[in-house]
Length: 110
Image 1 (tube, rainbow, N blue to C red):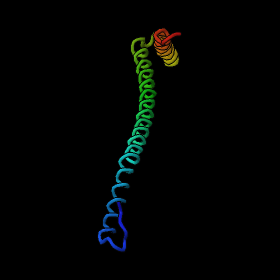
Image 2: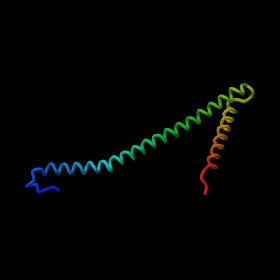
Image 3: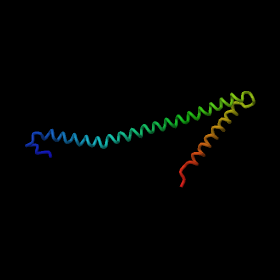
Image 4: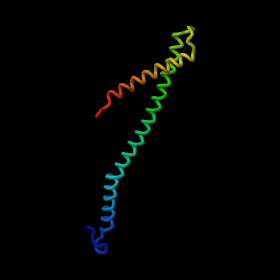
């Protein structure tokens, strides 16, 4: 217990030590946890945005690669560039539709 400042010579150092302990406990219990939560949110959002961006770029790459393959394999047999685009959209759309259908089947029902 902090004594009378007029009779206790160590009163200032005891008071400063007690304040320092209280501030340290508050910092350890509150501030460090808040920093961890905020870091998790920020890095999670950055990861989510990067993941979405990579998924979009990946789908574009797959579609363009499929267009090139269709044009390469059909050659000059009447399937021009515009038809290879439609074929690639049909194939990629079908694969995504099947993937979505499988995900819907596996979802938890009531």
